[in-house]
Image 1: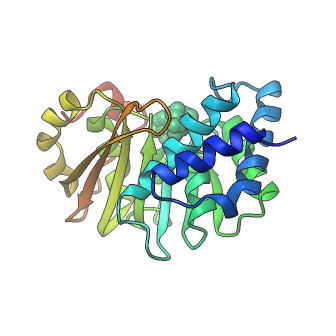
Image 2: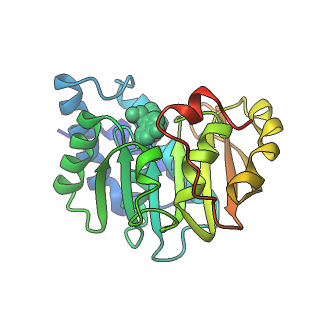
Image 3: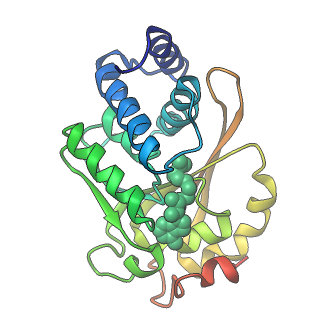
Length: 242
Ligand code: SAH
């Protein structure tokens, strides 16, 4: 079935507003929409159900990442807490040269993401099941990524502990946040030096179609993260560093 003509129009106009020509990618987004709707009938993957919501709040919201000049390279990217594949799948569709690992702690979500990767024929995309607190200590993943992205996963003080250990030196992490970010940012400077991170840019933008406010918070890895971080599963959330 795919996206309706109205859905395609929304995607293309929203893309334009973000400075992107999404027309070559309409078939991939259309297929992803079908996969998401079909899977959502079996298991509860996403609360977004209307076509407009999926296009705007999943596809276009994910692609706001491209407002930052961080994706020009064959980078290794980790999508931490990808859920049903956001922002990682849209990012991979539009920037196929990125090598992307899509990590989530929930098996049914990882199963869906693996199914979507196969159905879309995405090469260099891998679904990974596990907890960030565990995998960040695995030498295959620790300090092994140029970029970490995360949307709607945890407050900044928690996210910094989960994400920075995965970054190689000079790598950058981007947290996608909504309108209320000031309070989370206020406390963050206490935690970053412990983790080898420093504050980068905070980019404020408006989501196309409706203009909801969004923030992209960039953290930069400037020193190796001490081996004691991240702490064991659950602790970063229970006792945040800031
Ligand atoms: N990024 C997606 C999903 C957000 S929901 C989106 O924006 O649509 C948050 C997801 O993060 C959940 O699927 C949850 O399983 C995952 N998550 C939370 N903490 C995690 C951790 N410590 N390790 C791995 N995944 C985690």
